[in-house]
Image (cartoon, rainbow, N blue to C red):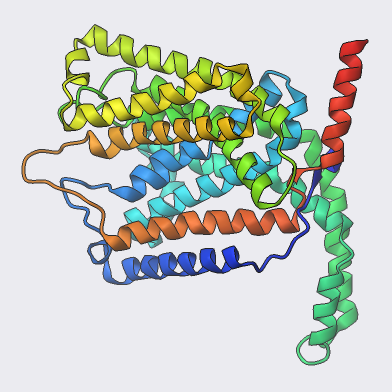
Length: 428
């Protein structure tokens, strides 16, 4: 497997969807600026009873699970040695990098006072017994690891580029702004040579980075569940259990595989590429077993704690629990059929049901099932929602632009060659 198995999507960057996403991003970042200038009360309905709102619930607790496509694909490729999925991993890493990077950004928006962030890097300021500290440390480290894992895509582009656009810009600038055209050209050549020098050396150590990239999400995804263990009097019994760390870890895995399917289907449809039906069908075969384990733990735990009657009481909390449960169970049931796994339409529907159900589970734990006591109410303000919309829009916008300038998507003829090689091996 090499860098030649990827290609960039040849298409215009400035499209109608680019404009829409850019406008939503600018609105969101304008409100972020307003939050830092006027304080969190100007854009949020959070309070002492609800110290976290939609930003932590979606952008961090849920967003990092949705960003686990890279984690799930790395387990499949490097742990289970399914190398024929390798062409799909760079795209999954890109979405994971955006998801985790923006989760860290959301925490900064939520916490405020960014000028105090340097304290995080001072060991004497650490609270090593805190699950929140572990989450912050792992998210920051994993974002760095994802950036390193994605670096070969940038180095390959720098190594092979002819700098045509850069030279056109230099020619336009010279002599208006850039007086020394030859000096600039030498710097571009230096960057190209540096990329060629660094890429093979990075390839030699990349496997160690990948191992770290598999370890870190395993730690912090379970810790995201551990955070709510101390809220035994505030989190509804339908969700508060000692199995929260395990449930969060399995939850991020099946969401990761499901989002990899959704991402592939949507990008192939949007970019008018052939659907990767064979690869997605293989991914879909794993999901029902993970969700089956997850659902069994949930039901078994409720039965053990004597909470099954609350699950079927059809009150406010029961309805959200049953909705989450039914969405995940329905999506999983569809994927047990091999015929449906070979249908792009059913793959999309089942993956969407599981992602929505899995995300609702995290919303239930962090927000809907959380009750700090009488007198406290929370519903996100419009500005809060628009900041989250702006962050999501920026993530989609970034993905849309990067796949058009860097080799991220699977090279079509490489996948066909892999299929032919595999079929020949099976016949032999």
